Image 1 (cartoon, rainbow, N blue to C red):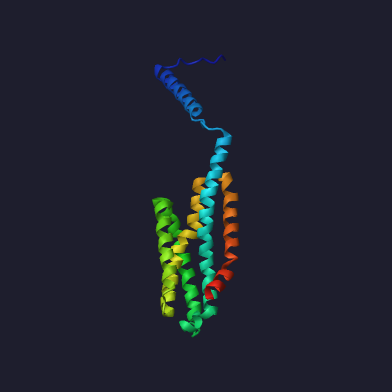
Image 2: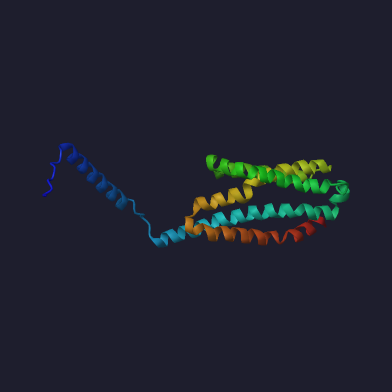
Length: 204
């Protein structure tokens, strides 16, 4: 049997023309959206971002790690006697409250930074974190150290992993982030290696 071709209605013809016109516009838009810079210009831009973003994050993370190790050195140098932290579990409690606040607030901080942006959230947390560190120098009681350490953990929950990784993933393409994140952690860890020397110098 011979198949009969049904006549195309005016509506179907109009739909096909509309679809073909939309595809042509999409192709034209794709062609016009090609980057207007060369690979060499993009490479230079990435290097400029590297020199501004990564060192700043490394310094902040390095200071954060330095502060974590600094309380142990301060305890040995004289804080144990000055603030009576050797009694019971005062010293252990002062260490514990930091990580409790850090663990509880790390995920909420990651959600907040995506909503309000790193510019405001990171700046506020770094400023507050610095104020807590400065306040610990004026503490005259072990309970004050414990309270400040709890706030310190809360503010540092934004600075360390969520904040730094968010900034890196915002500035770089997906295939560029792995090397930057590994470099960030490596340099921050190297800076933390000098925490003992810095604490010893501060003690004298």
